[in-house]
Structure formats: C-alpha cells, structure tokens
Amino acid sequence: MFDITGVAWAFEFLLCLTPELFDVIRDVSLRVGQVMDARLVSCDQRNWPPKRSQQFMDTYGVKPSIDLNLKGMIVVMKPPGWEVDGKIAQASKGREALDGRFALSSFVKHAFSAEDFPLVHWADFDHGFLHRLDIPSSGLILCGTTMEGYYWLRLQLNTYRMAREYFVVCQGTIKPEHVSKVAVGIGLTEVRVRRSMADTRGKPAETFVKVLSHDLPVLSSRCALGCCTTVAIRIRTGRHHQIRTHMLHVQHPTVADAKYTLSELFLVKMR
Image (tube, rainbow, N blue to C red; front, side):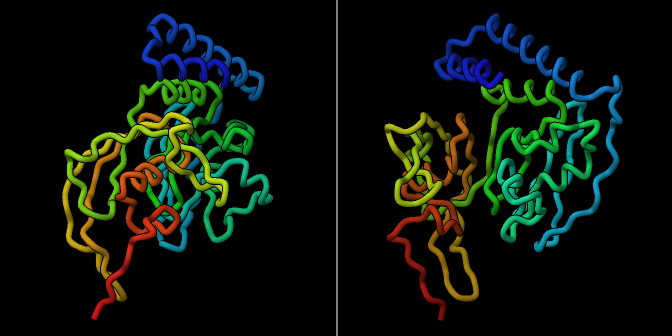
C-alpha cells in the first residue's frame, strides 16, 4: 500500500495524476483497509465512539484534545511540549515521557482500546499518525484509527488533497515581493544528526509564504530580538523540518529556534 500511494504521489507531484487513476487507487486503498480491519478485529461493530480519554497534563499545564472524531479517523490538537511519536516509543519501552517530552500516543491510546483499535497501539505504523509537528509547536494532527481510515487519509495527504497551513513568527523584516515561494530540495547534514539543510540535490520540497505583519521586537527579561515578521505558510511537500529549513535558507529563521538559526544572529543586552 505504501508503494501504491507512493506512485500516486509521484504522478500528482508531476501534475499528471488523472481522476480515473486516482479513483482506481482510492478504491484499492479502501478495499485493502477494509480487509485488514476485518482480519484484525473479530467483531463486526467496534465500540464506537470510544470512551473519553483520561485527563493528561504536561509541564505547561496544557493537555491534548480530540477535536474531531469520525469513524476510522480523528484530529488531535497537539500542545507545545508533546511529541508526535512512532517507532521511538517502542525503543523507549513505552514510557509516556521521552527525555522530558510527552508522547502524544499515550494520550490517544487511552481513548482507543487495543482490542477494537489495534492500529493506534502499533508503533510500527506510528500509532496511526499521518504527519508530525515539531515538539515546540502546536497544531492539528491527523490520525487514522482503522486501516481503512488510515489509508484514505494517507492517499489524500500524499496527493495534496489536503492543505497544510501554519502560522509562524520569523526573524527579521520579510518583504512580500522578496519571499513568496521557496522551492529548493532538502537533505540531511553530515555533521549533525537529523538536521535538515537546503540542498538542490535533496528531496523536492516547496513552501509558500504569505507575509501577514511586521511586529515589534520580541522582548524578554534578558535580551531583545530584532524586528520579526508573522507569516502564513503552506507546504506542498512535508519534508523533515521543512519550514525551519526553508526559512533559514531565505535568511529569516523562525523565532526561538536554536537548531535552525543564523550564525550572524546577535542579541541586544537590555539595560
């Protein structure tokens, strides 16, 4: 199924995925999901809707929430500090806190039983999560709770039927006429583990930027940061740290991001 959706992505990325081919791939995806669900769960009717999840609270005093609950798929609100985890949770022996971070799967698994919704409990399938958000950020996460729902969401995501938009604060003053689209490949650095970099030989990546406002300097008790720009960002592809990498590439890294920032950045000491 991953190969089939990969083919759909390739055709759509080249703008040559016909409606007829999409319909065929959709029908196959849904049918495979239905067959897998029938084999995984013995009962014809799942216990749906699931019981309410327990009240989780992180160090910020904010907990995740299930904002949309449909058959086979949900939308989870991820607060800052929570990690959209997958195979990493299996490596950490199922702990709910990963190096001080909180695993979002621990919240979802309390809402969906392993007997009725085994997908949510599978680290190899990333607990049904379709995509990720960086730990410091907050936003909506798509999650499949059945194989049919998971494959249907995966196909829509891979063929750009869903728009992914973000509200981001960047360093410096961005002029709308200078930055509206960033289309440069993304690869991985050799000196730092899992740190992405703009690379023309990397995987294709496209980011669309719309300037919303220019804001006053960001102040703290110790220092002041220069003028910042709030932007709306839509990504066509979803590469590892794509937004942070592309905004660094255009010399306007995201605010409060020590991993992707300019070496020329300096802080003004407050008097």
